[in-house]
Image 1: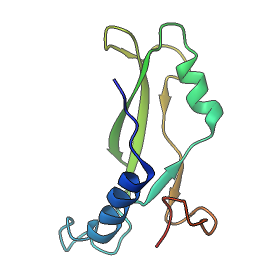
Image 2: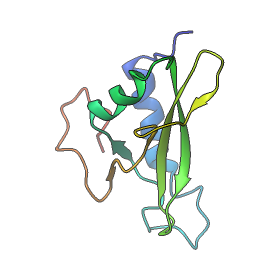
Image 3: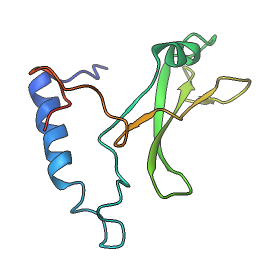
Length: 114
């Protein structure tokens, strides 16, 4: 299965999200950065999960912290589609969330543009 999309499609989707993200929230949550623009992880963290014996895929969930912020939670998946939750370094979270900590000003080909 091919999971890749073009840069143009990615820009279209991320732009639409940026434009509409506050509109999908109830008034109680608007303006509180509940939905971030991005979450950045170290490559070594992903590689630690991907390099576990039997890991064939990654599965991402949306989670919510106590302060009501949305976070990505990622786990490895084996060839049977089962999550690999044993041992240390099995569940990724705690990425760098934008906002408040955002990437540097983007080049024209980036998904991080206003």
